[in-house]
Length: 364
Image (cartoon, rainbow, N blue to C red):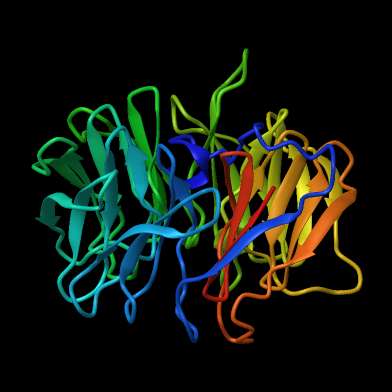
């Protein structure tokens, strides 16, 4: 799933960083300025989708990046959010003129079921407890039966008509999702709204992230983009009650990224700077700014055994989560088009997988 699991913490400690990573493979998938989705992982597959103009979901071999199968959405449609692989199924949603939620056979890519989704979705999919959860662009959260594609329930989020980029997160039998004017918690089984935490500006690309400490209050984090007279802000909200526990007013781009967790630390971006905060209190711990000045970070972070990884469209970096020191970096040139975007890295199969400029790069 997006950011490793339904909590969206981005952590997979199975990637060792005791020696410098080396490029395992670099596979071209799309040309020009088409974007690829964040990678997710099946039983033995790397799964990456592409925007309209290519409109495919690719299953790649972890060993060499070769294509095992690809599924093509109807003309004009494509994938913006990440898919989710659970058991022998891959679940994905498209946006475009004829959008659907799909369940595909994980082994072959064959369609098992497809359900029309009014307005489509620009967000990543979550799958928990037999429910496929989709944050629709018509400002409704949908739960579909994983086995059949039947709509189990839907619930309204914020009013408005803008694309919804925040992916649902799930914990405690609740679905957490960000929308234009609030962070919502819904009952997973019936879609009843449990609480709404108001937001002064939209979360944009920021998806909820769940922190469940051994003791203390479970938190859900969401960041906002800010606006006229409103600072971009990271909110830490009590996952049970919906009350704010603490907040962090930032300097920009907070709402364009999803945060990540590791060893009791919350990792965020402010412009070019990667910061670590105490996950329970929000107290700053360290800040890393690349020198000389670099490009703006893209997407979310991935967290390995001891490093926090992020991409900026030119390089992939690994920063020590303990002290904020740069440990490793490598180029991710892709197709070389300066206007082609990148996306979030992901970790699985002892690989660090990075989509950038139409290519998928993998490091060991």
